[in-house]
Amino acid sequence: MHYSGLALDRAGDRRSDAAWITSLATRPGTRVVPLWRDRCLVRDGSPVTPSGAVAHALLDAAPEPVLLGLDGDTAVLAADLSELSEEEALALAGADAVQDVRALVPTVGADEAGLLAYARGLTHWNRNQRFCGACGGAAESRDGGHLRVCRACGKLLFPRIEPAVIVLVEHAGDARRCLLGRHAGSGSGSFSTLAGFVEIGESLEDAVRREIFEEAGVVVKDVAYQGSQAWPFPAGLMVGFRAQAVSETTAVDGAEVVEARWFTAAELRAHIEAGHGYRPDSIGKLLIESWIAENTHENTDENTARQAGGGPERSPAGG
Image (cartoon, rainbow, N blue to C red; front, side, top):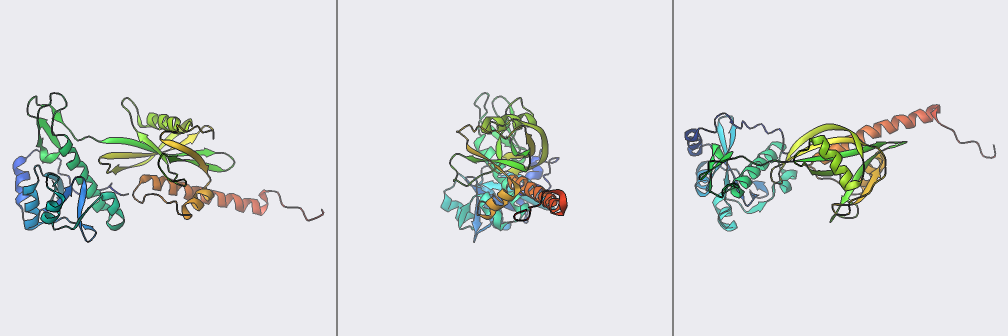
């Protein structure tokens, strides 16, 4: 799954060794992932991650380089060039454009997408956590960019992760159906799984029940975990679930969700084949496709049983 399962050794046990991190930055083979205002620097459509003299120049230009980890014996760092102009950042990195990591997914592997998302999330947090929220003092980077410490009151500031639930709601009636919603601002045929952020004091399962009821007016039960993925927006965690609807009655909130519709597996497959696809990098696509596969198989089995004598046959004309 995109953005997850990164093989990089994050070196969490050595981040507090400032001298070791400094030595990594001066190694000839060290790779650097440069970003400019949360976007990747690319050349000919591919992200640049230089080593050697270019990498050292990038690290010198970044106010607070971030340690991402070790790829074998090779150190991998991120450099935030946001204080430069776009033209200066491109020239320094040997790039010809900047691009969002999510737009690069079709052209890079899952592991590289995970590295870029990781770099984007940490550089974004460091750039936006320059000051302490308790006393307003300046905060300095520690542990290779994985911790910031207020110089005035000593408060420890850790990277913020925003968990959200994303849900495939199913109703098991005469024909199994799943619930998808059309969000405000999306096209007339753009239906997707429902999702929402987890609030303070909630379990993940509590968040599923609340979000589905708030957005679609549907009461759900039997909430079951399906998987999770990192999500570069810029540092989210998407947690996937399935849930059973108590009834098919819907009442959309009209703010976030403007339409809710129940689909059989056949209807949903036809909807996708008509051009209404889903982001290739989202766990929502996995939830939808796995549900279609399971229910397509089940419907085929049921139809086969009916044809073998399990259902009524049409009477001959005039019988």
